[in-house]
Length: 602
Image 1: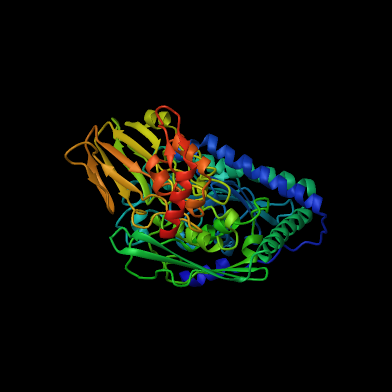
Image 2: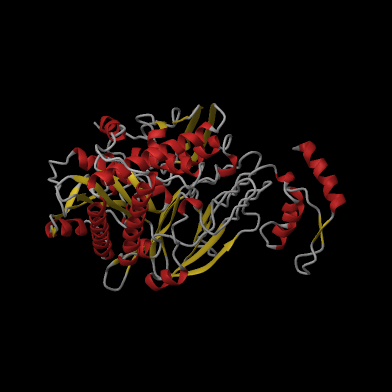
């Protein structure tokens, strides 16, 4: 049933029926209003939620879906959440009469087998009807919740073999009926979550979509239902046309990439993701045939909706950023996602960790394939983190707390032609405001000792990847710590001759006789005072390192991004002087000779 349902959910919905004609200016004014409504709803959630993962990190997304289940506007949020909301709404629309949709209703959904991402990503949505009772659009908010009511806090069970271990799934659950809260249902949902902050998060999501629905109702009354529907059709058609225009500029051909995950959570090594991108005129097809489909894998199952979203996140990144993010992209791009593979698992497979891996490897493989036709925009939209170090304990009242490791970190920021890796967080989390050290320390009994970029922590290249950061943290009370480590054997890949990023690594109880490197997974009790150190991989390089501007290498050495030794070994740049005296200079004659020598080896 799951594969049949996925095919139904992924089928191309028709345009909205309308008798109105619309000019491009009016259509774009309404489109801009949709974006503003999404911004207001997402900002409301970010400010009103109770948990730090939302009110500090802002891991949330707002989107508007039309009455046929098409993404009318995907606006504010982390990029990897932009393209998943419509699938959950579509399942609700398929069951419109069963769930008795009406004005003032609010629903929640998170079921991976019914159009959802992974369980922690709750989608709350509110249908918007016109005054004649016709459904026009649906306002949605999606946000990552700190718990899902499963075996382990946070919903990340390393050894889970089914979805039921990870928590409670809601295909579609009505929280508000005709404007009245269903307190029995809301209390039941709140009870299936470990954290008191969840009640505030859920309330913020409900009021956020209600706020958006109110704005949309006013917009519909101002312009009329027929005009709004015509504007949605126009916007989606325009995005499809712009997407096809971009593809038509690319060279026809077949471009392949294979990326591996080090291991699943049970230790099975080298989990394969294979992507083939075919370009024929204005048609792009992304085909995941060949991706791993071994049935006994553990922890590496990405939901169908998530796979679609992560593919599209990278496709969008390869195109003009001014193209509106909506259903037009899905109309223009064909996706082949093998049933039974880790990119479209059988029913009831665990899904929580799949949003890390293979989701990121799918994105990486699409990026590598498209670097052949759009190298100037081939920045991987990913985070190769495995999973963050999660530390869990109880306060004096017996209430559980959890620091999910959403720390400031530099990682996975690769270079593109003309631009070195930049910033202090990965591009896929570009709208995520990573938690401040001070905020985390006021909430949890932890101390952030240091967060610093690692010299030589970015892949060498004509354009250099950003260095990865080493985050060192101390727990002040006995706690449980969880981790899944990948990207040590298969770090982020360099492109067009650039070097790979450095591997990830992780150590528990640093500086004690019990210090140990986490090679695969860990679920350990840490004593008070224990120190954990997580080395994040940096970004990969782009282009051959020997072609990097020698003055740029000198500046990297002065900034301590690159060591003097690496300047010589990787870039063939011979420097005189010392960092301490700040008199570093390039020996051009020696550099020319060394680069000629290294080029023969290269």
